[in-house]
Every structure is written in C-alpha cells, then in structure tokens.
Amino acid sequence: MKKIFTLAAMAAVVLSASAQTESAFMNAQELLGNPEDPKAKVSLTSGTEMCKSASVTMKAAWDDSYILQGLASETDAANKVVIDGVTYDAPQGVQGQSNPKPADLLSGGQNTGAVFEFDVTQDGILYVFGKLTGNKSYYVWEGDVKNGQGMPVAFTMFAQPVAEGSAAVKYTLPGDENGYYVVGSGYDNATGYATASLCCDVFAGDALASLPEGTDVTKSWGTRWTAGNALGVVAFPVYKDAEKYFVNACGSKMTSDGFVFVPGATTISAVTFTKGGETGISNAVAEKANVNAPIYNLAGQRVNANFKGIAIQNGKKFVVK
Image 1 (cartoon, rainbow, N blue to C red):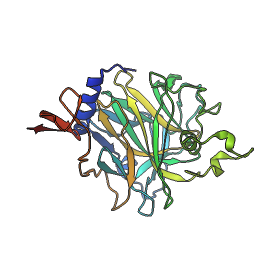
Image 2 (cartoon, rainbow, N blue to C red):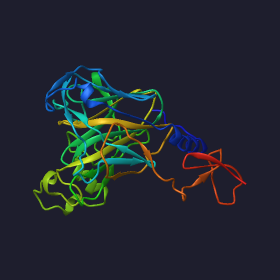
Image 3 (cartoon, rainbow, N blue to C red):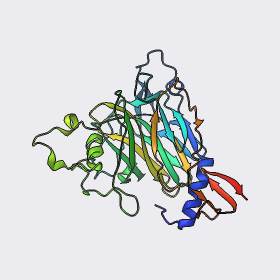
Image 4 (spheres, rainbow, N blue to C red):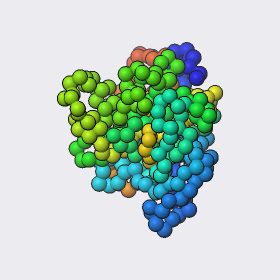
C-alpha cells in the first residue's frame, strides 16, 4: 500500500480533493432488469458493473442473486448522508442473497456470495454507502481475494440507526502502519470482527469486563446500537497500486447502492446524517461553506488571519489582500 507523503503534500491533496470529489450510485431497478416483483431474485455474474465514477468502478465480485432493497425511507431517522459539506441521497440499492464465505479473518477474503468489488485507478478515500445492521460484522479486503490472498483493511464505520431518537454511532477498526487490520489485536472474535454494536461501544471506551456473565452482546448491549438497521458508510483509504478492494458483511448479506470517492485525500472526513425530502439518484447538494474552516497557502501550510496572497479554504482558492 502506498503510504508515503510529505506533510505539505498531504495538506495540499486534501484541500484540492474536495473540488474533485466523485460519486456514483446505481440505478438498482435498471441494474436488475426492472423486475415487476420488487423482491424478485435476479442473478448477476461476477464482474457485473453496478455503477462507476471517473476513478472507481463498483462491481458484483462473485456470481450471486440480488433483490431491490432500500437503504432509508421517509420514516427513518435519516435518509441522507453528509460528507465534506455535500449532502447525498440514499437511493434504492441491491442486496445479495448468499452469505459470503469463508467467513473468517484467516481465509484471505470471501470468494463466494454477496460481495461488492471496487476497482480504483487513483489513491484516495472511498466511502461505501450501505444498509448496516448492529449484529453483523463487516469486512474490507484488499488484493487477490479470489485466491485467498487478500489483506484485511482497517476502516471507519459511520451509522445512523433508523429508530427515531437514536444517536449516530462511529467506530474505527485499528490498523498497523500500513493500514491493515491486525488479527488478534483485541477486536476480533476468533473467526471474524466483533459485531458492529459491540465495536461501537468498545471504541467509545466501555469495557467488556463490565458486562454481566453470559450477556448476548448482539442483542442486549444496546446503549448505542442494538441489532436494528442503520443507514451507514464504511470509509477507508484506497491505492491505485492495490487496485482491487472488496466490501461485505461477514456471513450475511449487505445492502449497498454506491459510493463517494475523494481522489488524493489521505484522511477520512467526518460523516453525518440528515433527513428530508424524497430520495433520488445521486442528488448532491452543496451546503453552506464553513467560514471557520482552516486556511492554507498553496504549499499546503496552515496560515492565520494575517496572511496575504492566494489562500485555500473549504477546498476553494481566493486572494487575500
């Protein structure tokens, strides 16, 4: 994985990335042949293109059947995702019908079942939209998953449970200096990652030891996210040298409708959720710029209010006289 950047270069690419942000969302109805029955199972072969942007192509990784599946609805707590001040709808997506296997961390990846593949041609940060569930585990893999030689990638998950009044949750799986998840680092349960609900609590600072003996954490952990559904985003860095990435639920099916990609970015931005209006296909709406955002010069160095010259704020250049 390509990880070497100077600090100035890192700042410069992060600033310039917002103007280049790409997004792609599938037309799920068309992808599945406009089935009359919304729950009709439609077979997609390995390599079927689901949607694409200039730098990223989303595919069905393996042969599987898919059904239409919404990520959010008007009655949910949220139906839109906000990344870097841009609001994205969560249109209808697809859900595979076969559990990905093998379902453990030592297999080098899941090479059967409902797995989403992402082929990339630029370095950057990829945000994969999904309908996530608190009692499921999730994987991101890089490399030759087909032949069991993939590497598990550390990622950050953001989720807004659909129940009204539920707070958004976030956790980051730990990675080594190269961004790979470290098997046995404390957040996997012998065969896979801990469930999403459990991770959210663990990363919020709660101790497993405080749970009563015999507690079923997938059903009764509950202070932040129970086994219910959530509108979510799985975010992680990608590298053109690695090229192929795979995202899926562990031993279960994951619903997705597309992605947002920020070329050149090296850090994962905050992701928030909002609600309102009818959802559609990739209806991106720019929100008001943050007037308190940090200001940088063309070298990517942060400057103060006394700076004179060409400056960059919120990803846009302007002249300070």
